[in-house]
Length: 255
Image 1: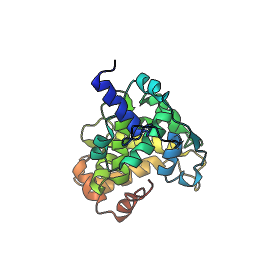
Image 2: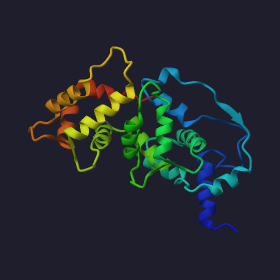
Image 3: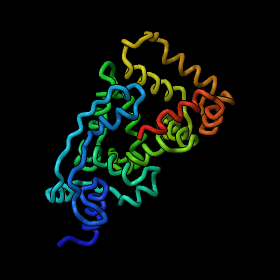
Image 4: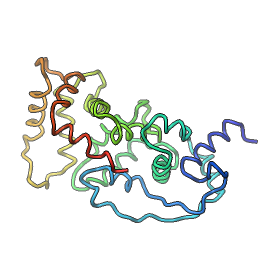
């Protein structure tokens, strides 16, 4: 017999991916499925126009029970995730179906994350930037990103306040998480971005572009010229820059 906690966990997972109707307890007749790559394509400015349709329709059945019982991580309940994020139930169900389709175990490790991300930038090497991005999503520092990690960060990026979005970006750039951004950290970030974009961009970029970008960043952000940028300096400067503020709203309505 299943324990009460197992039954609740199974119910939460099935409610998230809509493999059962929370009102009737019965599986819906049909549901559409898209991969995480297709979901992410909508969220990236350089890829939004190139996402494919390719959704398949399939019949859900009781066989899903066996799959759900074998996953190594089950997400928190749907109501709990609604409280923790700025997504509604339907949006979470759509995101979960895509996440589980790509990651049946319920978590994604760094190598899988890099593999998925590399498909967005075939013209360059995205591995280092994907590494930094993975660490920002891996909020528990355990080498794995769960569905909860994924949607909580995505909620900030897409639906968070301007301050929340900027704080998340600062955490991405603060590679060793010591509360400040150094020139070395920003240089690593810039090199990873230019490597990811590739050498065949238009207009073409000079070899000195990453270094020039870091210099511009510190001239604007490092108010007391102590060689590091703190969260307060970062927030103050960004919130006074109209271009940065506008960029914070690029993804407000993508889902």
